[in-house]
Image (cartoon, rainbow over the protein chains, first blue to last red):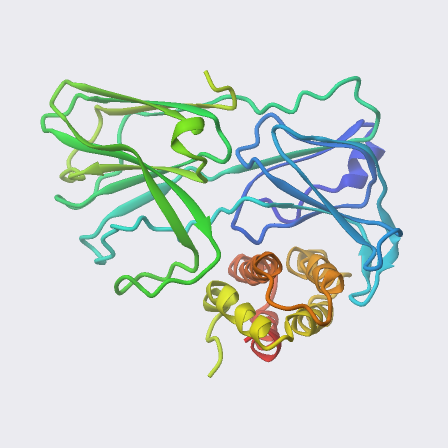
Length: 276
Length: 116
């Protein structure tokens, strides 16, 4: 992001009937705030993050803090008041509405077999996930919480040392379906595999020098590593119902290619909330 | 011994909260950590809130816990997750210049005092 974040008061003063936080995440510690109450809270269409925690001032509980979680399948419809002139007890902070992803994003994540050797080791790229949350100030006639399908298309991959692996990490949070298509128009064979990764909160022993990841991850195979010959294609379909739910799709390309041109190794990914 | 950096503290939050759970003092530890945050991150400075606001759910979790709580995997997970996120918020805010190095050091000191 995106800090300082958008001002919810400006949305009201500007006559909008909603306040929207639409931002790329920095990390798992992102938390956003609103001085405004609302009549509904829902994921916006562009969100990669599926589960979002909303904390709000509630006089009916002892701590004055209550929370709810919204997801692609569950918006919150009802009066959710902000109390910025009152304070949460003990910490004495104003009674704003707080919004934070419940899903995790940590760009220090590295796959289990990542080669950390500096200079000649593996290379990793992340498609940074977007958090899109909307507070509605007027009662919407109906809420359609479904997120938009997303398509990612890459016509090349980043160059790295020969015989190493290039890793591409794409947000998967709660998606029910994904299709992966790869086309190898290079002059050498490339092995491609897909795993799912689910992040957790626990430190692991350092795998090697340079490994500073604070998060743990469980990984599962979606598509076993497969050699894609010159001018050949590889396709794979992911269904959450049979392959589990993951935070990331992690794609490996081995060997990463010589530092000439990697144009011609095309990747096309579509993710959807519909189990197509 | 203490956690050397906020990143290490974030990664150790589960281990350290587990230790507090085992000692039966997780509720107190969370409350103390939450109470220590607002003086470090004054609410009047908007950029501080991206870290300081984590004190609110941490305090709420502490308030919801029974003082005589035995081991609870669910509450341990919630606590570790919130502490992890608060520490990470400090890491990112400091890296982006939204809080000072001194504030990051103070947050780490609070972690080492109450959570480690």
